[in-house]
Length: 326
Image (cartoon, rainbow, N blue to C red):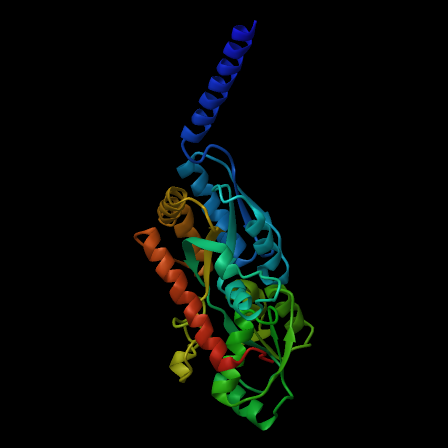
């Protein structure tokens, strides 16, 4: 009886070992993948990764599920992904606005996104926003706006998508370099900026043309400048900030990050899949209608260098603006 019992135990152990070995040997990915998106549905970051997910599903042979966990400028999503297993099935959808805010808001609890995540791959750049004003503002050009603001310090109010977001930093940099003083009205996302302008709570605001198109076409809002290095396709007559003598702020980007400790083969697989998806017809259509562009790299090592450089650029801007911008 003892031999029989021992034999059964050995067989059970051997079976368990085979099952474990089989599970380990399964090619990645072998189950659905989650993208935890820290931004509201319909925004540029959300649209970019929902579009990518369709092609990734085909490339990887698994469903890619986008879950919106908006709030606290991406912090809610960051905390959830930081707690996830680094097994290649939970990723963080990140963007430049949340990255800059994370650098500024490191707290004493030990939550430091730079030390908790590893970049997988950047995806898209932009779209850059524009500086828009209500039609009642007595300024038809950017130069007239600056002159009016200088003559009326702290009389004009500007809306951004939130404190410490990219648009907020863009405006603080612009005020510093142009020598003007405006009152900040932080909103909850680009939709809030549009509402503040529509209600005339704010005189000017920064947002993408995708957010402002209807109001600009109706004449309710006017665009004074493009914030990026290139003119907006739908408004080729509007100059860029560099053309007006003002450097741009940090470039806008959307990227995928993974929990620290995710195996390198998984990072390589996902990097290659994203880079392939960026060339798809579906993504080409997105670039045309949204004025985004692909961030194409050759290796995951390049992605890591891209991430380091991007975060270093934020630190330089923060050093210029200060840690408590108004």
